[in-house]
Length: 336
Ligand code: UFG
Image (cartoon, rainbow, N blue to C red):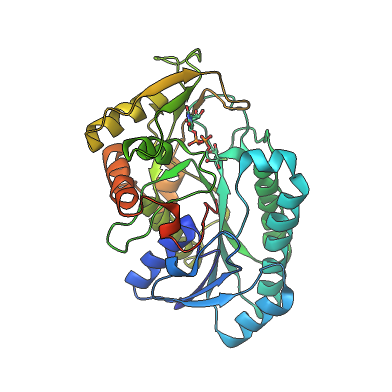
């Protein structure tokens, strides 16, 4: 494998993927419509600006480059927005993946690593969550990703497509070497919000609910460094190339941290008091989401290398260097 197509490579996780592939010496082609991503985040790769739903655009990309494998991050990823506008999510996420798969079949490309999510599980049956557990998404974002997983499974049977659907838990952190990081507009994720308080951009962070059945009453999540996520994608491509069996893989650390623990760790990392105020629960938040990551360890040889302090410290480095959203020439959002 020499040339890798990264769809959505100008977004948060995609740009970290590009940085890793470039570092490892791959030829990287990025396809991105720059609707939520930004071209400045693509470093060391060729950027083809276009929409993956546009078959003519994709056909041109595949004709002009001998693509050996695809990593697909191109998607909308705001859970709340997906509830009010589900057709936007099915229309972009599902149709975009369908168009990508059609083009792959047409050009004889048979390997794809797909950006999926823990939101495919919905309200979990048990902890930690295994890949074989019930998948019953509670929002259209998760449902659109699960629909794509289904499409991948059937395309694998019908056309011999090999796939890994990587179900991310809570991605965070940044690549301080390359100078890329996370900045959503509007911001809804806990770690960036906590760091915005430390930067003085907000007075306080709201803790959404203190009455959950968890040790300190606040929600528990499994935070995973975006660089560890990128590593898993590369291992998944190599696994498929060696003939590994297609399917879903959880990407999480296997450790859970509560909202209060995140705030406390951020206080330690930043040296800032970070005032917090308990607020009502946010609708639709499961109390605990922790990944069982044994399958990724056994099959892909993947092991997360960076813990919570490093995640927050790397995110802090990036946020300090980009105190105003306008420091990115345009807003760019997570593409999970
Ligand atoms: N939280 C707060 N205050 C805030 C923001 C968040 O208390 O200001 C809490 C949330 O209630 C939740 C936790 O912090 O309990 C983490 O919230 P995030 O919004 O950072 O992340 P989520 O776990 O809600 O969502 C993440 C991804 C989604 C994905 C989901 C899969 O952002 O895209 O995991 O489980 F769908």
